[in-house]
Image 1 (cartoon, rainbow, N blue to C red):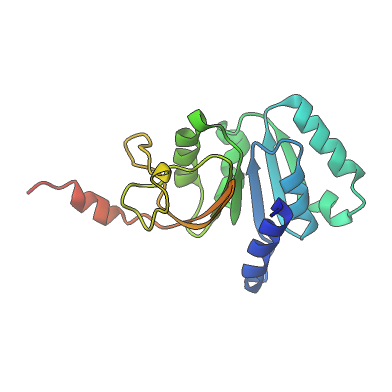
Image 2 (image 1 turned 45 degrees about the horizontal axis):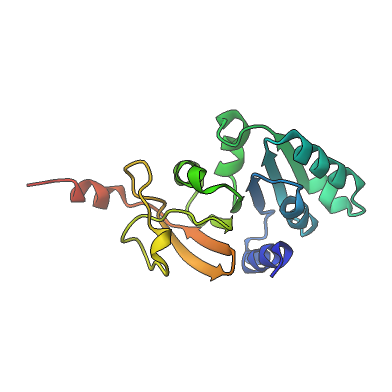
Length: 184
């Protein structure tokens, strides 16, 4: 399945919102996912640190025949971990796409857990997002990994086919976490 089909499925599920949805791609590469989302009417933001890939995606955006694509998309060059670049985008995201590398996934997971809101879909291509251990149903033990002592993101794995995984970010019940750390 291509990325456009996956984004369109999320768009159809969220159509009842009656507001423009926001898609963020961390490591947006040549801009394929950003341009697909923006062509569907999503406000789409791509963040890419490789200047060559950022330039390629910017040219693709400018040359697009689809006016929605040009209006609804924004491509930023820089480090996704720089709060001045990613923080405001992530806080408003309805869907966040990740193409990270395995060593960065714990750090990306911490950023997502902190910045994204409950209900945000997290789409991870190729690399698994570490989930909180014992949290929801984990289809594959590779999805559980320790992340900065917090144990991973609190999310439900809702799609797992080939190299694409989609998670839905759940709320964190801090009272439950506080009680579990209490040793009476």
